[in-house]
Image 1 (tube, rainbow, N blue to C red):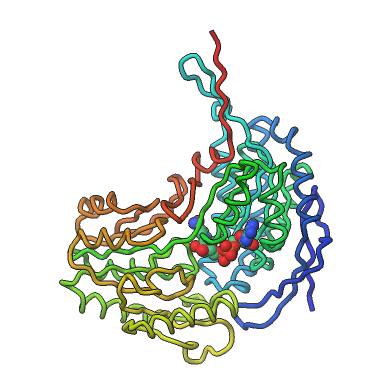
Image 2: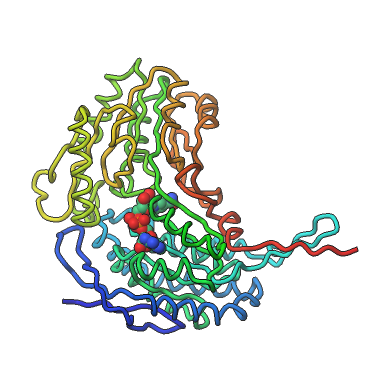
Length: 471
Ligand code: NAD
């Protein structure tokens, strides 16, 4: 058995003192491929100590010096690109095209941060005050498994650009994907202690990091349940928190939509990354006046998707992360059927001929918005179709969720779509097109989180502001 006991603390790849292990399985075969050794509280403490000791000199670097380091990270991510792509595909089943997209964007986060950094970024004059933007301090970055390199790079680039040193805790369900990321960070050659990586579970590593008195900032991407625990843990020492959490996003198909455009848009929004995406449009709202036509077109499109080996170029839906994720998705489909959902496509069990690995049938269930599958985040290729009577009800249903991360609108009239967008409580709304935008803020309303990431919003989240007044 291949045992992975590799953490990165104080500029060195080290073995953890922790002894607990976590099984690493292939999404494609379902088989065990390695075992990861998890850190314990002592490992977490050591990583924080290294980051704290590196903070004074790193936070004193000039923007120009930090730009050089960000460029080194981008170059190192490029050198480890192929390893990152194949690890992503193997461990969590994302398709080859999506894996390449995730990894290339991971590198781009460092290049974007490099662009943001000028001497002026950190000083501003307002009236009699000079506003100095100063690094928050040691930052803990907690990331999920659905594209480890992307979340690590997005958060680390912003934190490092701001002048913070970091301790990264990737998900224990993403150890395989994070290995080449760890290698890329180590190869970039930043000063010791500026970036540290410790693998571990929420308890004890996550709890130790998020309650640690020497940590000033916690940025987490994960489920809403986890975000609440972390926020509680962080408040005693009044840490700044950024919480990017779950979603149950609506895709509203308006009655004037051209279905040849709206249906592929809704399917892509719902099933990107095999449905393992926080921003997935998992509730498709359909006008009563076109109910039968839209349901039939959606069912046909979902049934036609090629489910298969994610390494094959024409595969659209690969397997899901692990057996636990497969079982969770099956349980939701069963609940949807038990509660009276109408099966429009897919259903229980593996797709034909794909009995090995964690393959799920992309599933479409017509339900009402109060049913379990329409309320809870499933994190797999299962979409709810919900009928509405008019635009007012569409807006009400779009907002009838504890979440508010994202929304999608398909319409023949963009101005009408914009009016509806302004009525939806969600951090991002995309009309007719999925836009790949890192320049605009990202984050959720309601229980989808607190704070915004990306571009200047992301970097600001790692800065404190001090106003110095002169006569
Ligand atoms: P998760 O909540 O299980 O875990 C996320 C991370 O938090 C992992 O690293 C985990 O080890 C850590 N964690 C768990 N308990 C902790 C604790 N007590 N203290 C500190 N850390 C702790 O989520 P997941 O299954 O890895 O990812 C899927 C979830 O993430 C979904 O809910 C999804 O919507 C959400 N997500 C949100 C975004 C976003 O940007 N809003 C993006 C991707 C995923």
